[in-house]
Length: 204
Image (cartoon, rainbow, N blue to C red; front, side):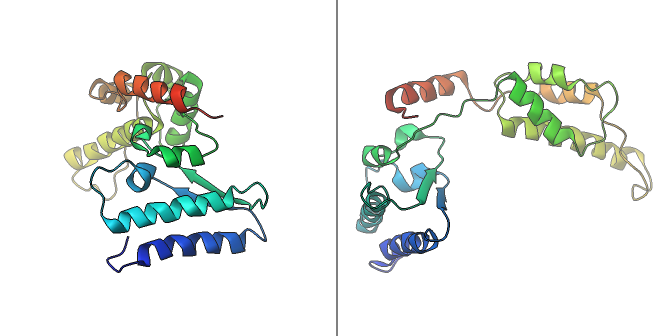
């Protein structure tokens, strides 16, 4: 957005023009995070926001023209798909719901985030994956960071010269203590809401 009249929609046009030029050599992806902040339904909207949204609709219509296909792909991510304005929803040819990770995915996530950590032999990643049903990948990352911080904090509490001390290996007990204080960041109600939206608007 810009305080100058017409500049914000020009920025959108420049972005897509650049993408079209680059797409002559190789495919281009425009990724928009927090899609709802740009394309969400608004009750009170100033003129500049309306013009930007209309420009975006125009640009997306241009890249999905079947007569003149362009290798420019717009990908958006949002935690609030129900806030999206329907004209934008229609312009995304595929709408994909990414559910919380299942057991195998949680296990692989634990393997990824514990790889750089010093683990004790009793750490059971299989059990941790089963204990964290409903946790997101971000939740699991936070758990792994929390156990590392927990172990690191012991150095400052017990050692006089902490510059030469090394943290002890992380144990299964450390993980269990952290998990006792944590809940999944995604509620069951939210998952039901996601599934309801997906069943209404899905396009795989």
